[in-house]
Amino acid sequence: MENHSILWSSEDGKASIEKWILNKEQKTNLKRVSEVVQPDLIDHPKMKGLMFGKECREPRSVRLFEMKKGEVEEYQYSKTVQIANQAPIELINLTNLINGHFKSEYNAALVNQYKPEDSIGDHSDAEKTLDQNTGVVCVSYGATRNLIFKDKASKERKIVLKLPMESGDVIVMKGDCQKLLTHGIRPEKRTKGVRLSITWRKHIKKNK
Ligand SMILES: O=C(O)CCC(=O)C(=O)O
Image (cartoon, rainbow, N blue to C red):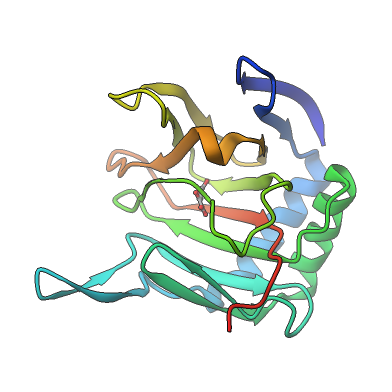
């Protein structure tokens, strides 16, 4: 990974968003990962419960992959439960690269796929089943989409960073990021093509 930059940091320095770019060989491997995970993605999965009496679906396609069988099993966030699939070897190899780079122990990856009209609402990855001392890492593949970070403390939820994530970009949301900021992606209907993101978290207990 190359070209490290710090894109945002909190005043006390306890939270930061940092970026790297995959090198050519790593980008080739990322392309392969995207091809291999594609058939396992769940097309706009159903969410729990009803909204105004209607069934709701996630506004994108998703799949959770665990690195070792039985270690994570599932991830519950907002109104969704994702059951883990065993990660293919290509994704395990990419996870090993990420773990080596960040000196971390990510044990699952959530893959998101966005068509131009797809999105993810503003949220923080603050579930109790995640190790909050380990940052959330995200790598982007395909179409460029804007990841928007907002300040939770400001009344009007001020945008602190609008980050165009290009193919091969890797970011980490470090330290107190999830406490201070939300992140989300809006529909961008003028975008050409599909974007895939792979997001790594350290899951600390099974959700039984
Ligand atoms: O697709 C992205 O870059 C962000 C995904 C995300 O926010 C999430 O998985 O929680």
